[in-house]
Length: 319
Image 1 (cartoon, rainbow, N blue to C red):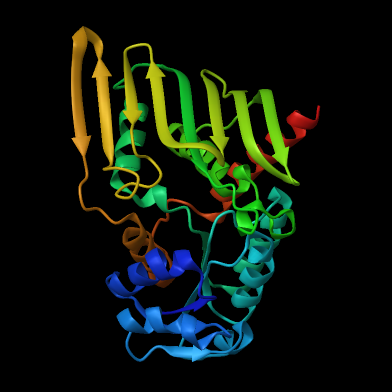
Image 2 (image 1 turned 90 degrees about the vertical axis):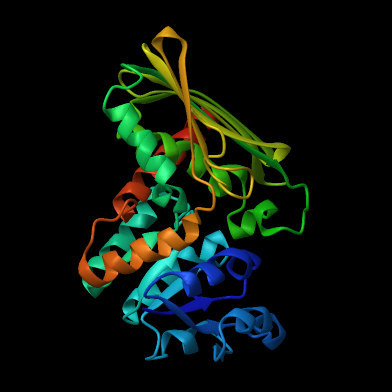
């Protein structure tokens, strides 16, 4: 699969660009950027890279089969739809939309085009999440009673797009996707009600969100912030055991992926996945789904469910 990237974002340069080029059966062949100097780091690992001066020119490139979109959040929906209409498969950074209803537009464009589109929710492709889901679903920790998700980092830079309301910034759009989506993915359950929601804003963007929810059978608590010391953890607490993920979101960057399983009788085991690149696995899974209709861990319908929960969190905070 021949890939193009819309924009020379730092994340694309550091993670997704190299992952696309390293993935089996995929090749990075094109980049759209008006700044030629920004293309140089991409050309270093993707020799022969075609550089287009604007996004439309890349979408018109017949030598591109799929595009990766790392643009600011407020541009995701429109450019995903444009790319689908141009006959490209699309992998778009999260959040793919800022409202759940907007994802309906993307789903309709996907279906009309016959192309594949997905949100880049890479954690669902990491083997630690497949393992966590299997353990929770097979009753290893008994009946699930509570799930807890924590994701924080400190980003006070006012110039950063994550801190700009006009570009769809905020802690919930940036990392709430993980704290909510991870639990939905592992439990295969949906929230029944948001029972508590505190969302603090700074200069027009949310920088702290504390959430409590009922999932029907178990409770949920979540905390995300872009103004706190970096930390991440997800815990599933059953009546016969506890499952803890110590680096659930930035595995291999924040820390090594590790799954701690504690069950009755003081039995404790640890499973680790050193050297796994979840971005490469995501690209390979995406290509398989786009080419041959293989099952995909995070279809747009799943992403819509996470965004719908996020919409409820905002609404509950407003009262």
